[in-house]
Length: 273
Image (cartoon, rainbow, N blue to C red; front, side, top):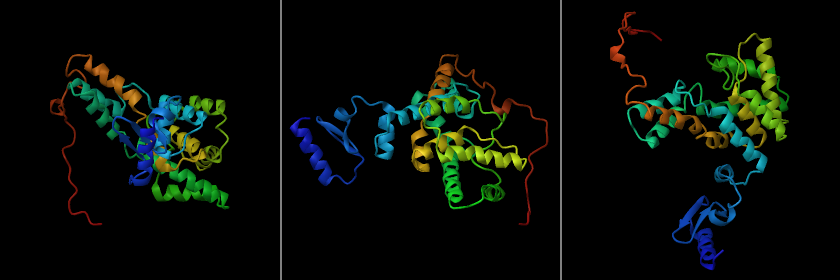
């Protein structure tokens, strides 16, 4: 490393108000505790992402697992899926790739699927695992949570109950020997409770991702931040497919063109709480 770069990094350590990094024009880039140009030559992009979020360099198997989560769990190039549809609409109107990707990522933060349940589901698994370790009864914990919230994040799936992503992801976890943690085992135990209670709620891929990463020490917020952009692998093909077709052919009918003959608009008035 050049002497001027060392001096710049030393100044950064003593004077910069944050430890997340800085650019030194014409010299270097500080990425947390490391030099972007010198310390990441043999690292992957996933290494960089995880290190930037957590502040610790992941083991190769952790980066490999995270990469597979991105590939297996969210890279579906199907414009019928809610976030991909937005990107395809952007493409058919000839918007830019950046806007398509940005808005599709934004709507991925849905309430019942996508990024928001990731945090809640991870929090639920960590809290439940702690309660069970402290002597709590899993049946009671699960049913009380279900009674209070009416659902359990990471359990249940619209359209079809079977989640085809689970086995491929678990196969990777087994190959990497990352499938032996308490949170992952807890997912199956929760499923057993729901089965005994005749609840038609199977664990979906979100629970397995949250459990695997919780077993690796990821906090719910770290889990969320690390998978935040994981839908992009499926979003971009949908945008490009719409761009390559004639303008306006994706969802060509506006709502005003649909002749609805059902019940009219109904308003709730004078409703007493």
